[in-house]
Image 1: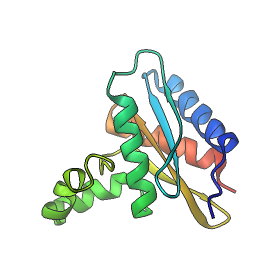
Image 2: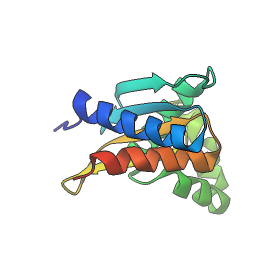
Image 3: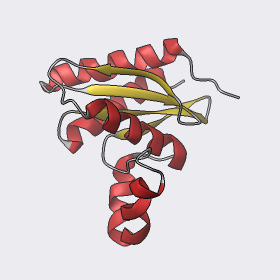
Length: 136
C-alpha cells in the first residue's frame, strides 16, 4: 500500500531546502514513493540543470535498496562490479551516489528523498533533514 502523500513530500522538501539555505548551497530535492514513482521535485534557485534527474535517481536508489545512498558508495568499494554497473542496468533510474535517504514512517519505508546541488556531504545532510522531518 502506497502511503506517500503530497503533503508528506512537501514537508520533506521544505525541510531539505531549509537545511540547504543554512548550509548556503543551492539544492534540488526529489521525493519518490516506495515504488520509486516521483511525487515531487523542487529545483532550488541556482541549482544545476541536471540536479532534478540526479536527485530523483538518488531518491529511487534509497527507496529501492532501503538504505542511504552514502552506504551504497561505501559498498561500491567492496563490490564495484554490481554498484558500478547499477545505473546502466536500470537505465539511469537509480543512482547510488551520496545524497539519498529512505523515508520511514511507522517503521516502514514509504519512499525516498534525494538531494543534489551541493557536495555529497551537503546533499546527504539535506536528505537526512528531509527524512527526519517526516518520520513518525
